Image (cartoon, rainbow, N blue to C red; front, side, top):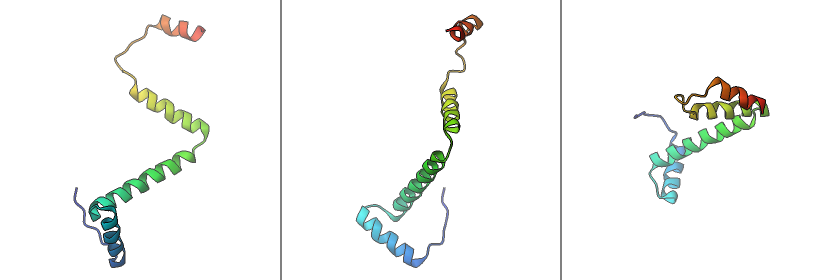
Length: 83
């Protein structure tokens, strides 16, 4: 997807200098910076969750990985609950 954005000339100059130091294009540097920022914000938001909310997210992720076609009989569930 291609989007045009307006960037301040001073910031663009700094981006060009950084891209030369990093040996990558300005576009690649901006993509890396945006990716880093998004990951940072996700971690920040996750760390702000309570332990119970973190457990809920963990359970949700496990449930998403489960095989939906795998079936267990009612008796097996009851035996597991008794243990």
